[in-house]
Image (tube, rainbow, N blue to C red; front, side, top):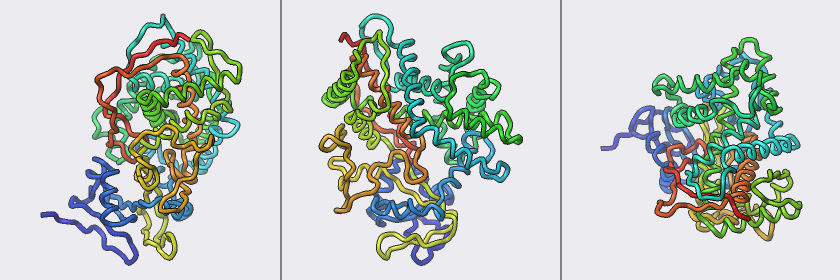
Length: 481
């Protein structure tokens, strides 16, 4: 017999409540198993707004994307930073920024993100291109044109991890590569595997050797070590300068902040790169169009492609790659399962469309789950199918998408929304464009036969880009042309 524990009574105007039968946990296990399926089933039963008890938190899900703007515009009453300020310190091992112990730090850190955008993006893009070429040339653009075998995720991870690290944090004093990079990457993967549990506020002491792994990762960014690095990005320099202003912040605390940036810069970008590459390799017609587009941009610039010649792409050239960008956005649509969370700062009535409103309690979480929108056949025709040019119309980026006859303000939300939108999103997309461009220009690649199609691992639902359940093997060789 199913027993429901009513953990708090419903007030007038509040959405339906789904408690589950286990106190505190509520529906956490079902949600974690397959969030998209779980939410779709409850939407069918309860409508497009309902509250779920998940691991001690009452989360109200807004399932209709036409209602998203009503949530996003409430910056004062619905705040993202309070939730992130509670979770991030526990996950990455630094003291809470908003505790009052570090006045003004949060604002200073937020301001540093402008160094990932606008004109500052030009320097980052140029630096990343040089570092990608460096890693490619050191490890992959060697030998003759014989076929070599590699796993896609391993290829993406080894190149993107090091190139991103060099671009943001710089190079060691007396070498062009950091020592221990392979070990650092392996430790990062170990930590990242436990990331969903840490975000769920499981004490790190209960997660085996995770704390020791995290300590090793943090120690890599000790200020004394970082002081010897050169070509450090303006973004990291700015953040380091902010951290230095607080005497009560220890060296390990500062290192933990830098480690958090490493995770933010590669934790989702690497799997996003994997899916962008995988979908192109398994759709030859898309691969051919994208490769031709890249060649065309280089020809216009008078650049010849050869594996002995380094390539550069300006930011304007990257922006002109419409088919490549559409293919990346389509892979993001299919693989992203982020959750946009806001914490209610007070009891209030959240006005939705028309005369409709819902009661919200202080401390409760309001959540948008864009994967449900990305896979809505009322918005995207055949949403489960990869269509590389889905975001192109009449030779331009397509931005008009509709639900129930109404144009959507938000139709693709792989990077969050509103003021909490990922500040490094443009840098991340440029990274993926540059990586894929180099791959397609320098190599012939084929997926080895006899492998099952890659599927999404739903266990990281709510945290960004889903990982593949298994890797895929390819063979590649230097292009002859």
